[in-house]
Image (tube, rainbow, N blue to C red; front, side):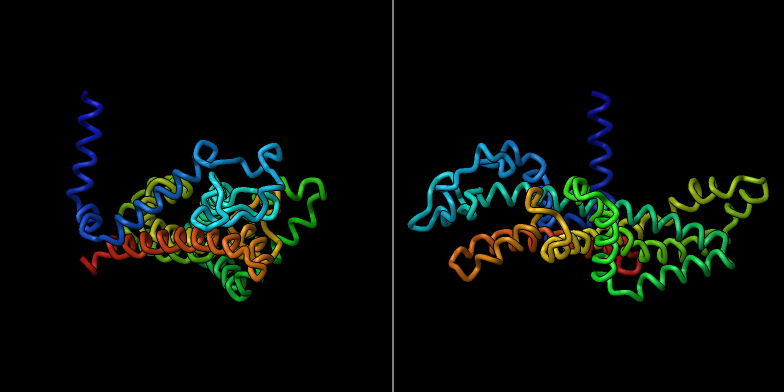
Length: 310
């Protein structure tokens, strides 16, 4: 009972806070959150929801190839969104592909955030030559088009791996490729906040009593820079998912044996003009719905955490 009461109290405090009040008064915020939660849950529990496992050859029947959606005259249960030329259920492939895209997107944002926050803390705290070196490195990354940079990094890592390991490590290569092209925004944001915080009395006092620089940055400065970082991470999640889909669509992302939404769109695009429109339309709608929900949530979070807009 005390634990449940404490949990209820935390929820009540959140709902009564400024950000909770803004969340309840913004339909786009709670609607996008609801949609995003549903998409994440269906992706995580797709083995329990999906009519078939598209990766299990025993569940795929070639005689069920290119069946249209269930509401069409030639539709067939349980293939609600039809099947592809290999007899895979499109709905099942979308659910499994969504899980791959979300895992890669969240992982890429996490890795890029760790890299960017670390570089931003070091640049803002030490300043001088270290700051100039790290920021010029960031400028160099930004001077190359993001997609081109991601393709280049992905191609390099794939060539370094033996052919037998390229497909198993395709997701890890994508995460590294996206993270190495998106850390600069975090670095610049944290650097600006760190340059302000390092001049405050609590940091000066910590340096006077010989507190290690790493502990000052980790325990004192970092917590005061997390608000803009979380906003940037939310907004960049949609970009990371789109980047993964673009790379997979171009053929340098996830393989056919581990399809993401981008891979499904690339495969479906080959059959668009043959009449099997559902192969590309439904994965595209799923991708658009995920990115739209993330962007709406990020826009609300940016406005809710901006004191000038309260």
